[in-house]
Length: 354
Image (cartoon, rainbow, N blue to C red; front, side, top):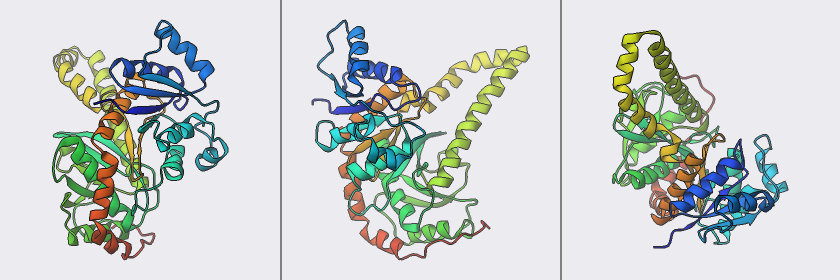
């Protein structure tokens, strides 16, 4: 089977275009087909140098003279910079010249491109960012990780379906376990939004996932496969998890330097620590897909390395070949009754958690 073309935004990341160029080279050498999108005057000499003048057939440059910056207002930038590398990459997919987009650029602009250029899957009210976190039993998906700050019950109900379909595709589990993030596991906890979503998901069982109820922030035990939250809460949970992981690593490193016995113990445990770092690092798993739009877009962190971006290209190719977008569309259509109940639920008022 011929590998799908993946459009890689060459001018999205914090250090662009160097990591993106290296990522395109890595991905092409690993069998992917990449359309590197950006200023051809910069990209062509760099690729020619790396390949000795003969760029392989599986790698091409698509000229885009402009770029969307991290401090640009997302929706305005997409409209005012049609020749920027990110919207041009999305246009390639829309025209069928590529099958997915990968970018380490402005995540708000990625969402805007997804909405304006790919459009939503029929029935989806808001696309969401789905990101991977390690657990004791493998990994889970956190959705939404930052795309939608304020949500209604219908949005979280749809996030549950989208996240479950994606996790099933990534793990092979037929019915992933889904939980709603809250401040306690009792049904009386949470706020009006989470209580409505909990009631709806309890009353409308899904053939695509098992609903486990509320989960707290201690979800790394592997008891659930998908954690559902509004984008504000989900993004905070993600950043706290990343910060806690960095803190543990820094403390262990500092203690190992100060105390001989701890240092020797750390040396013995190094293979285990290396494996934890490997499976939890973006170099290993790639980026976060934007779920709910008609084509595939992978969002990477602005500081992503070339290895992370190349892994995201491979991730995108794999998900295209597995038909993620059609699978999501089919699941959305199959949950019409659930979504109708969620649309009829009361909109949440601002309320203090109990």
